[in-house]
Length: 84
Image 1 (cartoon, rainbow, N blue to C red):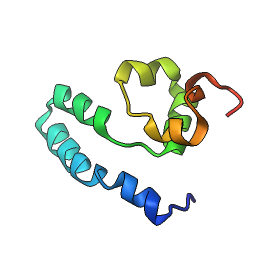
Image 2: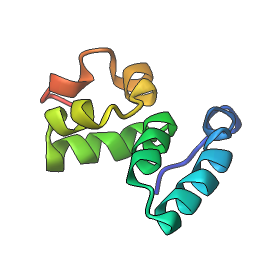
Image 3: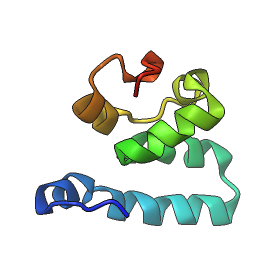
């Protein structure tokens, strides 16, 4: 289990509203809005790393996902750094 500090949780706070918006968009079947909201979500570094390892770096780029946590934790080259 990942342990988050208070500062970590504060960085993820904007996700509260975004996840509600994502639920509404998904229920409405608005795939364009779903994609736009997914791009704004702040993903935990470990989640995007697992996504990269399973789906590939190009999928993250194609979806335009926010990788700010990975850049913060692993550095700007995290997407193609297989040592991570």
